[in-house]
Image (cartoon, rainbow, N blue to C red):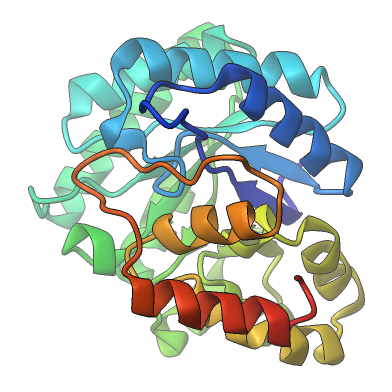
Length: 291
């Protein structure tokens, strides 16, 4: 269900900073029309820490409603507090999402046993609502200050029945290779780093949860489906350029430059791109043939 390319969806805001529901619905429709495999609302790229509880619920609800069964929805349900993470997991299940993406708790830096308790609590809660409801763990130490080792990831895969996979953004190839080698049958490994997508596919990964597919969903789908080196090389400046400044600042700015979004507004504490970064990004888009 969650193989191929899933877009870590941006959350569009109006110039005044409110959630732009109409723009979001158009954006989700466009993503599906462009051939994306699945949708991931309310992740880091969706600025989930800056959303109110009501907005988080509404974004997931709108994604499910707009997708209308055309593609699966993997709803962001991460928090560094286990009670809130459980609440978000239950909410995703109640709203009709097809699975949930849940991050390792940031700032707290739990031990492996703490991670087992955290993810286990989410799994137990959603199992009561929808047996077998799949969970994808998200390991991104650059954001959380905690790396989930291959040993811990594989322990979760074996001990928590509805843990269906991991989105790996550790940047540690040896670790990811160990997970790929020793994972149980059916356990998904998704790249959490666009630039690593092609190399990881070559060693057995199942796809990517992508930032760049906000901008180029069709090209990212073609890259993954065809293991296309030419597309990888063409897009590589964009895959790295999306992180000129904190994500999703560059991707929102790029979408506005491309005419996909009318506003590139970010919620504090994020700030608009500097003039220098904007100019670099515009040059990248031109060089990639996207302007």
